[in-house]
Image 1 (cartoon, rainbow, N blue to C red):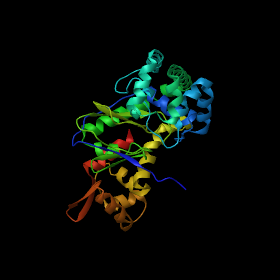
Image 2 (spheres, rainbow, N blue to C red):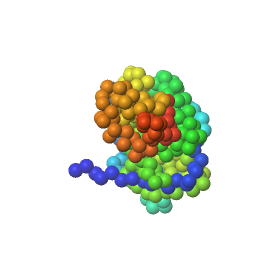
Image 3 (cartoon, one colour):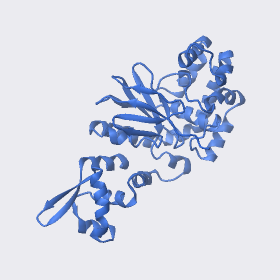
Image 4 (cartoon, helix red, strand yellow):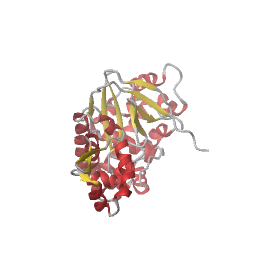
Length: 330
């Protein structure tokens, strides 16, 4: 029987401060969890095998706690330098190797409370220096395997930074947050995130940091209880084209069609300028009556509006409709 999905909730303030960070370490962690810790998040099998085989025995052992079934809470040490500013993977590895063993134990106590650490982390608690060295080795091995891919992803990462910035400036944050991942939902001022250990949080005056990852399409990583900011890592849009060798340019069109349906996505995309029902029908190769239903649905979603000009009714994209097209065209 499939386990029912559970969700953590992050309640947002009316105008949250939002930034985007490009952190290769978070992508490395996601790939470790998927390929080495065997918590599958959609990584293509060819790359899963390549990444798994790149990691030595000590690294694989250190990664085992990250894949424990039914658990999502982990010590902050798995991302030693928080992804709120640029930090190289090499600096993350150096931080792990320089960390005092008792600092890892303090981190575990903060994550799990003063009670005994969970069974799956007990080995690390008993031999913290060995775990830190093994985990640093795993991070290094995976980074060596995927660094060329990360470099090829730079144009997509740049576009995602622009996409987030555009959404924030144009007041389209709600539209943006609804497109991050199938495992993240936006509804009535809250982000709902699929989580095996669900909890409720309030953003308050903290900053929300979005971290796009080169990862499997089902991967998310969250840290929602830091004092000054929260960060949410999600799959980089169109990154699957990097794994599969496809053209990323088609992904925006495909994603819009997945959200709206192919017919309505085509109609919304075609409204570069206002058009009549007859003109839309001609573009779609059908009759006006066949367009009415889809226009009704787009209007109900606030993506188009109707405007009478003499005897004709013209269809126009609303501001929200323009924002949706812009979000999926970057």
